[in-house]
Length: 242
Image 1 (cartoon, helix red, strand yellow):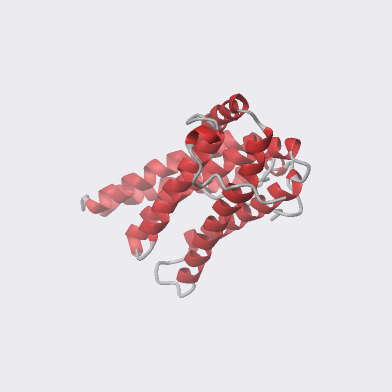
Image 2: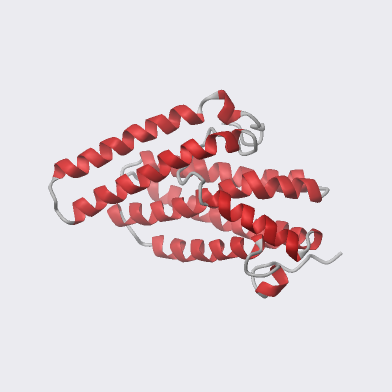
């Protein structure tokens, strides 16, 4: 049986319309590609800013996949377990890579290789989804089902974490149970870090920016505690366990 055509270049109508989960996923992938091109060649503060934008897109996108979309794939495809496990491994590696980048200094000699690997894994993840998983899902679900799934995915992605949490389960119920508190903490940190950057750009003095960074670090510690609690790890599998 010949392979099914990728969703990458198919008309929106063939994907179930603009509200379909396939159309929404592809739109995020297009934005990710744009951000990865923007990331190339950046250094220092500018690189960190682009990475945070990538993080906000990637982690909310992946969380919604893992809580809403992959359970459906496992239910409707006979090999859905193997297919989603492969993507979950990629998501886990992205979590690990971004976590390590956050701990590295700008001049760390290993930083460039880590960034290159992150870009590679993100692009592989897109290809696995658009070329393998989503064409199979398109065959199994009608337009109305794809639009319902797209609405659920969009709602969840808007209240999902925006930072790496490597020890949280990649599957329900662990990720669903920890999602909302981690999202509140992550999005608060996003605002604090953006404020610190704006103050630095405006040369508003060191103290206000330091306060914002200190608060962000405190929220990071709280998120670390949440993601290591037993409920957050419930549903974890050996393939992605850390």
